[in-house]
Image (cartoon, rainbow, N blue to C red):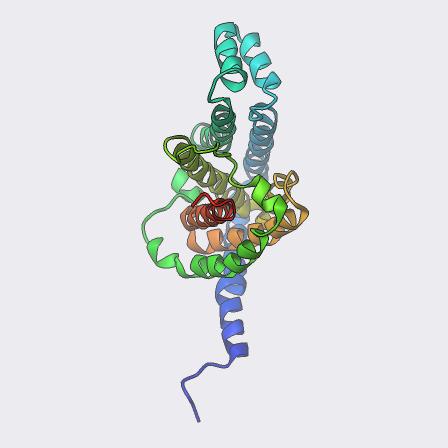
Length: 286
């Protein structure tokens, strides 16, 4: 007799089929169709463009965004004859009264530029394809919110527990409020830059890399993306880096299912906001 209540194992099988099995089958079928219709040389060239651009973007970000040690950026500017600009940036990062904020802003701006500018050039000018095919579709994405809401709900208890650790309280929020300092304008400005950085990051990893590589590599594109995504977490606690492996894989699969990176960016922003607010609360600043 049917009770109207679905057995947990049946629910798990249904979710696995919807978010894993069906996604894998669809992506592999798309990849097979691409191989059948595309000359091998063109397929290899397209994949090389995606991977080389990704490597170049990550290299630029790694060497130029550290506002605490801006030597690479300043040297690059001076090599291009921009001595005045280099001096201005150097002073802003070291001697300016708002140097702490300026260093964070530099980190965010260089990250955003690296994650977006080079991939957009590759897609539009080299590959001559549509950006919307790289996870930037908007139409129809609103109805895809449920799995991301579940992921956020699952994450919150772990974030709350972590917020009681000294290492967490020392690290977050990245912008360290001074004694008696108001949230406006610098903390709010930092949060705005931080949010845009997450949008850029999701486009790069779950959009440009995953959707760019899926035609050649099929579902393996997700796992190729997870390697550099995990590596950008190496300067964080080990558990957070390990979590990036799981999170990157899940978000990659969801991006393939929905064709969009926007909810992934929203999830990242929500988690980051929760971490910062908990850290502020633990410090008695709420």
